[in-house]
Length: 484
Image 1 (spheres, one colour):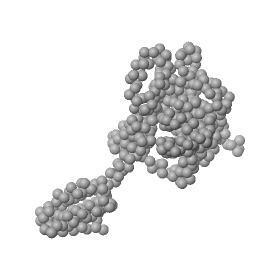
Image 2 (cartoon, helix red, strand yellow):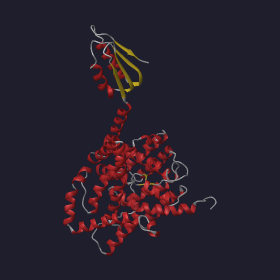
Image 3 (cartoon, rainbow, N blue to C red):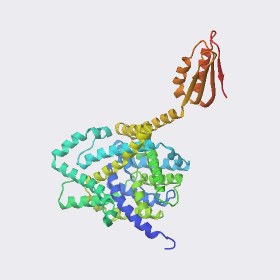
Image 4 (cartoon, rainbow, N blue to C red):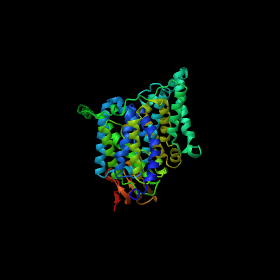
């Protein structure tokens, strides 16, 4: 025990994290359109591989609801065998970014874009899982999912089995919401696990006609990508998906690390090493044909709150997942699919920052607009392009705000007109500057003072020179420019 002074706390925390991770691993896999066992494989790799590597000592990695939509789209477009290649390539890209020490740059990403991305994922996830909760087939696109909900509700209300399935899903959500309020030892049991166990017991006891998880077996589900599968790398769409996997998984992991660091007083996260740890985990997941992984704040916060002191807790949680997958795989076949849909509906709801959006709208409406546009773009278009739209808006907003310029005109009625520019003169403010200058009297000399400008870009400099030449005609007094 002297060698492992915190073993007791870490073992206890690992069991809590295992109980939190188990239903989420299975639920994310089913929602992603892959065998349930592959979610467990990713959780196992997150514990045994990423958990052993340096970076963040207490955050836990595994399959995440935040990547569910992207994984589903990738499997639907390119097939399950291609998933391993995509995840493998994304992991190698993360390793390269970590080696190039790019981890800290993810901390510079606009928080509004990240929250908008998660909100968009949450909306699509909720919409898709509402169909699953009713035992119905969901449309492919995010917008189609939302627009099809009224018709799906009518179909569900018209069918007895769909109503029963929907009741199980709704009951799961209710149990998860209320479970945290229970006092005593019962409240210490993870809500997701309690909800799944109750749903499983009720459906079995009353023979409720709902679909359950299809079990293939751990080793049968693991399908390493064959050499012929790597041909998908010639597809531009696959390359875009790889970049999306790597960037989104890295951003979510490193934002999670920053959040986890605020929850404990232990060693701080080393971001480049954490990025490489995530890359190593995804590389292994790709070789096994499993789901991609990220660090997950729900599991990580549960780990800290359960009293974990070292990385042993997250490694042990991977051991417990491995033992469950190897010894009790048939238990998965008892889990009703609407219960897993309920868990993911609850997870999707938590991805939408309602309070944060209200706060942003009151203080920084530009950031709130970026959040909303990013989320809507993900729903209407797709994940990758939605994030790019959000990033582009963020860059434009930053450029606009950093190009504030003050223009003062002093005209005493006689003598030269004095124009004083201060701030940052960029092409974004050029129309305002030229409109003011071109409205000045043509028959009076102009003194243009640029000494107070912090920045004058090439476009503005050239435009001001051309205006001065035009204003200083043969019958017009010359413009006097004063610069530093």
